[in-house]
Length: 481
Ligand code: 5AD
Ligand code: SF4
Image 1: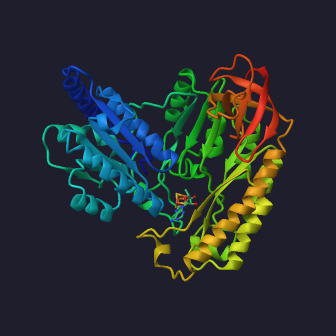
Image 2 (image 1 turned 90 degrees about the horizontal axis):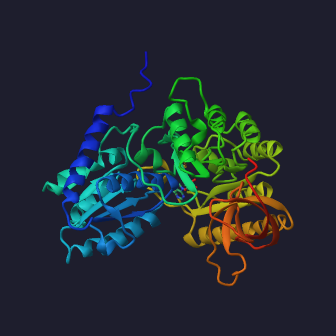
Image 3 (image 1 turned 135 degrees about the horizontal axis):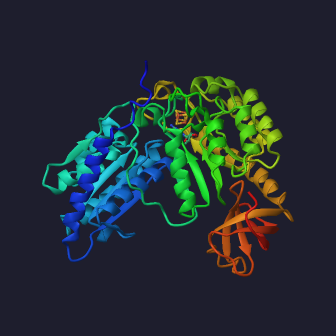
């Protein structure tokens, strides 16, 4: 009999971390002023959610968050490995942070996340960044209190990037979320897909789903705490539950969570097309809280490239899928990720990508130039396309999307939309539109009106549009679900 819960970290191990938190707290309480911490996050929403856990642990230890690294006693840099550009930026910034130690040698500098999970990067930090105190990988996040205590107690530099490469799940750690209406809620970790360009499965381990009751309890708490826009997170949420063996899939989870009462919206990301199902679209269409928003990366519009990427679907299969999604939700807001210049991509392959962009009619595209990641299969594939050709394709892709984007934005003219006000607009030229918010589909709206408050659901009539935002006037208040 398989023990499906074996990946959960034992309660006693979590209790030990809480004890370390308490020990650091006692120490900090003796100081005349509370010490400070500074966190910087690179990369995706999962990393942002992880940073919220680290911030939660540090806050419980008695550290106060600062936006100024120069006054911090603990600096944590949570890194990303998805593209080379992010790694270069991290190394650039580490130079600045380690410099702080010249005047304040007691500062503890920590690096964590996907980038440091790679052996060669850890080695580079060991050799070239001697002032970095603690390096811990994605599987070690829950042990941060223990590592910090060890270092504060005078241990030599700490490098902990091992851990169970399959990954584990740690429940019961503190979290400090950013203030506001929006919260991340991780439902699973890791990825099993091994797309040939992608480093994620190597640095975040195998797919593992949280128990539905733990997710539901966290959602109830978030709603009780006043969060109104909650995003369920996972590298591929559509494979939720496969590892649990309880006959529950992502659509079932969504339906269960949707039953939690309250005035809030539920969205999710990221979805993999090979696992997105009609059942999912039906659950989205029927849900009271579930937003009609789908981020469905297609990466390439060429079957040959998709095959080399190990994506598990074809161009036409993908297009049929989004057509099905739109039949269930005609108001669906759709976004996607695209990689340009995958090894061996020809002009004809790229034309296939442009074709999907035109036929898919996306509201938003995240476009990336292929970045070689050592250790992935694509890094070994011949890549003879000159960099200028790749850049030229990339520019043409942006142009194509821009005109589609404008048309899609224009179609909202005079429409009435429900908007969650989530901030003050900083647009100086648009001073009339004092607030900003998001539609159910996640579109940005600048809003004008009387007596607007952050956290309010308001009805807005769109008065004009631009490429980046819709502009509207408040015509009513209230949550409609
Ligand atoms: N090069 C470029 N883009 C990548 N992505 C993942 N790996 C790479 C890579 N090696 C993109 C994919 C993915 C998004 C999160 O990042 O489009 O969907
Ligand atoms: Fe990477 Fe593919 Fe997994 Fe997404 S689904 S994290 S692109 S391996």
